[in-house]
Length: 273
Image (tube, rainbow, N blue to C red; front, side, top):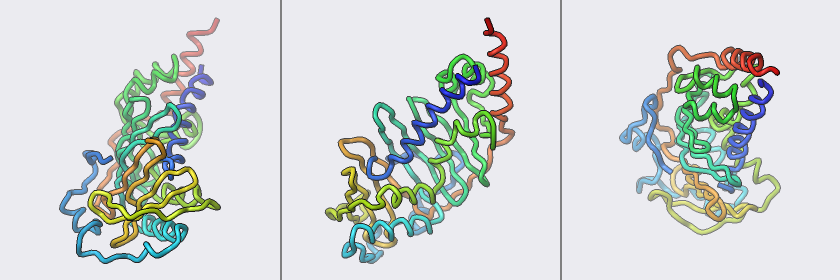
């Protein structure tokens, strides 16, 4: 039974990981979660782009690779960013509404219509999911869902759950997310496209080998602003650059490994024969 649960959990996380990797040139806005402090006024004064006071940053005269490198470097140097939108990989759709900062994250990921709250604090990942998510994992999952449904729990460093939920963790690492922009485009031709605007901010489009487009700001810092996938396969927007955030760990989270392991063992014993 535990083996079945591992397989089903792994399939869900794999879909998330695939979506995370597919965000770049293959793939909007949402509300901030309750634990994220990022007021509109603060965001406007904290290096928010798109104001007329900001000068042209000169990237429009560069090659596609140079623009991308400049943009990724700016994104990594930023203290925070809001990531929102949706990604489609085959029949799998994943919606994101996340605030990412250095070593911290907060928001929601929705997969198969089930919304999962996620929070990362000091390298530890916490999740809160409804019973429906666990029900997708089979009989043992239903037992675990009874105990963990709608409660915060930690992803263990090893054992059951440590690998199965990696898909969630991959979506919340700011630097890794923007590194994937470069890695996925390595060795591929990146064409410089037309000038455009994203939420009022002047930008230029880059087109990759998969025919998705990445919009990069041409004023202020050359931050990535939006990724659009080919044929409507997804759209993800990056906003709120350098807005102040305050993310705290949830109180009294449960231990997924201990609870899931016990439920799996019980499930095996009651279904033997």
